[in-house]
Image (cartoon, rainbow, N blue to C red; front, side, top):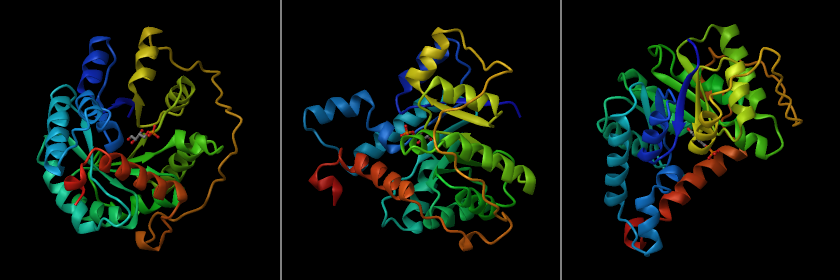
Length: 286
Ligand code: E4P
């Protein structure tokens, strides 16, 4: 499969703009932090008019329904999860969100609770996107938990930029997961490179022939303004960051035996939940 391009945004106007600019978007990814940056949410919070849980969920539904009319392949819709959210609570959200649109991938954290839900949803034929991936062990566990899935049913989102932010070369995680999946013959999980920060990231992902790239609005707008440059054959990605070493993992091992903890996973789960909670008033948070 050649690389498919998605937009990483919670604002339907961004999708509309880029499509009008001729950017060939096959899908869109959203997350709680992106949705609370939607202009309607920002305007209300500036007026200190907080949301109830039902109101913010209704707005999220409206946003993804609007986006789903503009892209065919996939719209990722993320469940609310903090560190205490149970698998059952995520599952109920997932069922509801999957009914919002015809082309959803339900985004779940690549944590023990998230993988428990992913395993069940995949068996029910529902599409999933395992997010907040920072390690090869998480990638091995995702492949193991979702074995038997149909092609395209499972996406895995390694976060390049957040690893770079910590001084580690996030792209090396992409290369390692590609290698591990290739060597083990994993074909049911598609890699969706996420948390892109720069043109270099975009070019490195194209050069690596990643299955799917999701990139923020501004990055794609500038790339489109420059007429969509692609990496030269001689393109070398050398960010001068610490390389993450390759690890040997057997993707056929039962997924519960993998270690899924990582400080960036915890920080990521907490960050998404905090951004979402911040738009809820006192009543909404209870
Ligand atoms: C997409 O699926 C991710 O949620 C997103 O790319 C995260 O990006 P960030 O690290 O810039 O928040």
